[in-house]
Length: 300
Image (cartoon, rainbow, N blue to C red; front, side, top):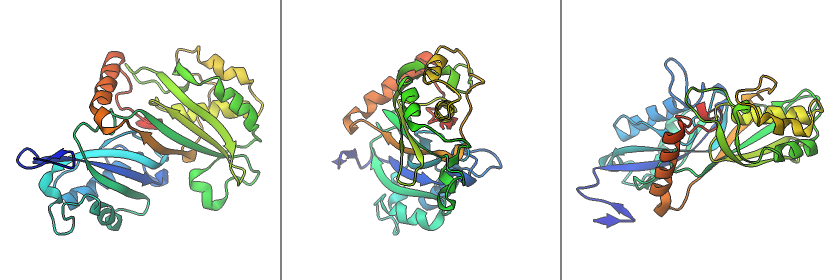
């Protein structure tokens, strides 16, 4: 029997849940589980395991590093279909939003929950990840109410020059100069957007999108372009870094606090399986990432 596009009945003793997640990364040691450390994944899995009455293991779109935030993180897990058949959940995964809100700490939230087909994979079916970086060059630093998601730069920044430098990095390149080394991992990425603007408060805001990011890539891109913005480097310096075959020591890594994963794009449901297969094939062929990280994925 099929209901709403999903098989139900005897063949449906397991089901897949998708979660849309937000968190303030300030007090977390990153997304991924780490012994003795407070992590985003650890907090969410613990709460879901209690509610769903079985051990929950999440697969995530981008394993953000310590101090990195998210408003648009995506994860999935597989659980027994009976896990939703309780008086409080009533076979409605959306009820998990309110249930988890009462149990999770204030700095992490599940914002949406839905049953999806097993073709959906939060990591492998993703088309691209979107990050935002907030950087203030105000003499007084970040406004106190924005300090947790805004980094401070000590010199004045020329956003126009930063946009010119960012434009030279767009496209499919080897970003080895901007990535922390991981044995067997490729540093070739398709950077699809990297642009800067000033918001109403005067904060320099970068919008950065790519198919995936290497470890530390987003913050290194920001740090490199900021040195252009402060006048220490020429606009063409960033483009020259693409010739490097290993991490460039001259590239500063911007602070984690300014970085937020704001979204992950997926194809239509009928293309999830094909996208996942393509991504797996590419990564198997080149040894990519191991983790589909967002930037400091360990992704960022």
